[in-house]
Amino acid sequence: MQRMGATPVRRRLSKDARRAELLRAGERVFSERPFEEVSIDDIATAAGISKNLLYHYFTGKRELFLEVIRDSSRQMLDWTAPDLELEPMERLRASLRAHLDYAEEHATGYSKLMRAAGTDEEVLAIVDGARHEVVQRTLDTLPFPGGVAPPEVVLALHGWVGMVDNLTIEWLDDSHGLDKDGVCDLLVSLFVAVLTSAAGVPAPR
Image (tube, rainbow, N blue to C red; front, side, top):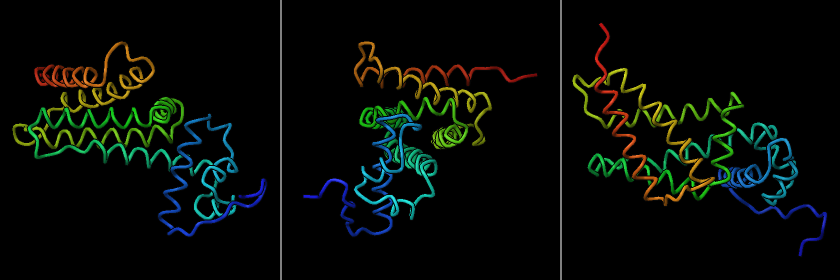
């Protein structure tokens, strides 16, 4: 048994595996407490390593925090990648279901990430980058005359993606009586309504 106050026993891991472990530890700690209340020692303890070793991978708490957010955004994008073998509506539903599964599995961290994006410019830049990627890959799967999406549709999709995040946070905080299938149905309906409305906007003269 490790003595209290003793240096954590270092396990041999590859550089990538160690970095991934630190990101997971950071995600756990930042999900439990506000950024200001977390110390490098807290993260090192959660990862089971020394503080000095942590500094080999990250310059400090802020860099680790932002990389945790980038990593979470990448994971979310991977989870929700559209399956091009499915029919369009099935594809949309599958991606939304994956989104809700991920958000539910990482409920505390997801909610804190989305809320932090409203007050932290660097966090917002990461979240916005992920949202732009979701919009672009959605546009890539939709047929448009001449292969170009109308600007109204592009703008509407950006609004819908933001709606998905905000609705998901509200559902995680208070389900309002809707189960996951009900939320997925609602998001699909909103997608159809938003795009149908945007596509019907007359072109400016």
